[in-house]
Image (cartoon, rainbow, N blue to C red; front, side):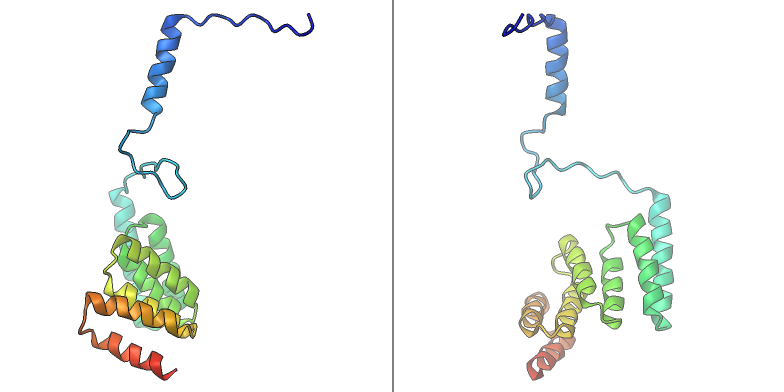
Length: 169
């Protein structure tokens, strides 16, 4: 029986119809937005009230630690909070403040970018990102970030002072 394939079994019409319906149900809607790599975005599960409340408590604990100057411990609390609720830009900017304080500038920039993806006009994220770039001695990136901030809030005194500091470096 060399060279011959077995006959293809006939698939009943009802099975073909069911397969077509399943394929259609799994197909992406025509207006769905693809992600950057071209794959279909999946919807994220909704946050439970319990997770949101626990995340808020952890964030508040982090805030208390910041007031005491315990930035490393605060980073841990903010990180725990973000695991439960990664949609809170304030938690990202608070953790970025801590990262700047402990000179983990790249982590601060990453957190600021996360916050800015949620709100491109977030003043604290833009300011802390500028601080982090200054800490890295990347004056050009610092100036660029401050200029974005000043387009959003032209009279921001802290940003203007940071820009002056960047020019002195």
